[in-house]
Image (cartoon, rainbow, N blue to C red; front, side, top):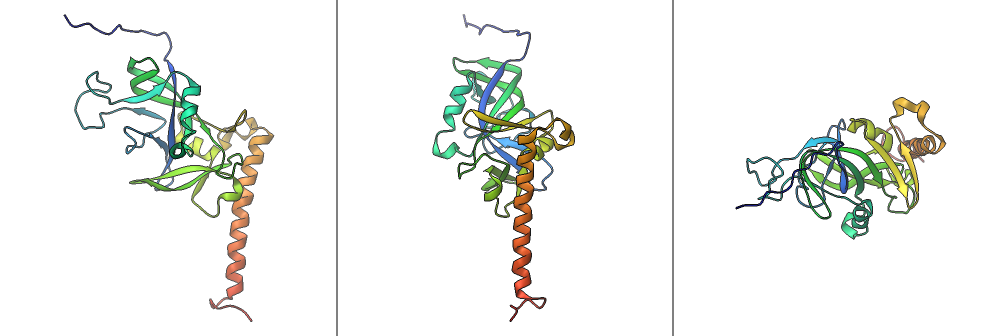
Length: 231
């Protein structure tokens, strides 16, 4: 006789935590994420369904396969993964586990998820992030992003935290955090709900972009209208 796993019927969808890399579509109209291990080649949206990464036709998750979305129960367990060198630029996701799932000791493997909150770590220089900028790698049709402060953008393709939340849709919240301090950032369309820290982060991002454009204009001005240097 084969033993069956016990079935759960929770009154509310379970909550889990995971890490992922933020992604921006090539045309700049969509935001998503990609995993750090199994399935990392397949970016997914804020609300997404899992499929078998091996191309098999069964529904994910299958007990005889390791496909499906993965997350852990404990936030601190997921945060610990951000300490490794290869995951320093990843973000922490709080997700709602939807659809069929298999419960394990440390987490879930499941069929569908909604990303509720993405917590962005500090810039590589240690400053609280004001934006997500081109990380220098990506997937076909998608650019990987990494946390960046306003001073480190240096003209790279970037999107503000509020802009990333807007592109992601589905009620996504993006939080800039460093240690115990965190700043919630929402869609700029609801600017009346933003506080001083959020508006200051947006202003710093705009100022950094303005400084870069002014530097480029000054460089072009030194060359003169004909392309050669003056004097």
